[in-house]
Length: 389
Picture 1 (cartoon, rainbow, N blue to C red):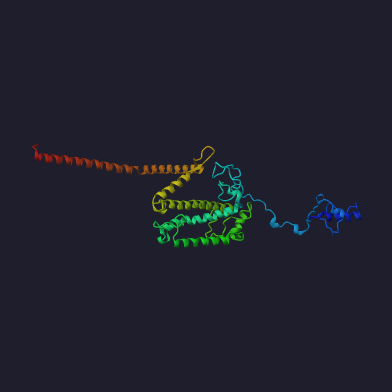
Picture 2 (spheres, rainbow, N blue to C red):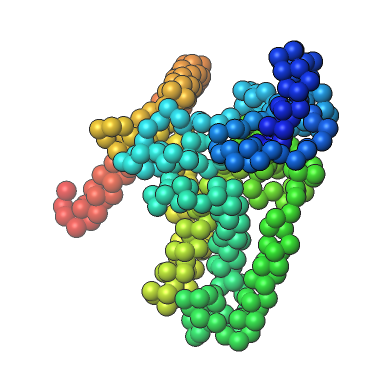
């Protein structure tokens, strides 16, 4: 509470008339508030004083309940257990970006949130609200994951009257629309738009998942997790663990798939616009063939033993992981065991095998001798008929 100069000067004059220098209980050093019963007219001399020369501010009365801090407003202790709360600053010790090692890590991207690998070449995280951008990304990711499945399926099994042109392409901005497909697409996106309008700024910390998210993110902010619609009918969100670390891992997986889907659907549209043919036409990804399973097995086998890392000198370095070395040793031990076991089994059956082999060899030798003798006898018989022998 602040007093005007006139009020302050009037109060001092009233007090000085009673006792100019006597200690007053109301002005003792322990007093936490200054109270004045009335404000008499200020003397003319006081009105001419420069207001900038006299300033005074009273202390707050801490006994007044309205100044007490509510328990809900007290900052809670930061919990450093990653299973209980998401931790901040995962990449604070890294100067360079993980996604773009030749650029410095953006200051706002410190690895706190799921999917944060320091990729922001345009510096959007510096000038935009982080929560809003994360929510926009997860919305686009989910739409792209639906689209990247629906696009080829529409060309594989969809009716031709819903597709575009003589090549029966999936309707899109680049491919174009027919009247019926345009109405259908407009209705679908209208539904998505209405859903976004109804859910964009709604409260979600009073739902089952929202309560968990609010607790998980207390070290970061009070907004919970972007994209939370309290939708998890199969309880997959806790597949990696029903704790803050497990839920963040699932969000990492969703963001990674969403980004791949956004790149994929962009590629679909670009390829069809350039070639004028369906993305599923003559494409090994959309027709039964042994190539994709073989590539998948090769990829899994590579990741089972090796990893690709970069350093200050080289961009791509293939290196066997410690887990890969253990797996390799186990496989070699298993092969050696199989070889030894096979050798032991062979020693057991070796006499029988050798006996069978000798029998076969003897039979073959006898057969050859019989064949040679029959051939010789036949030759002599024929020659004796034609020549005097």
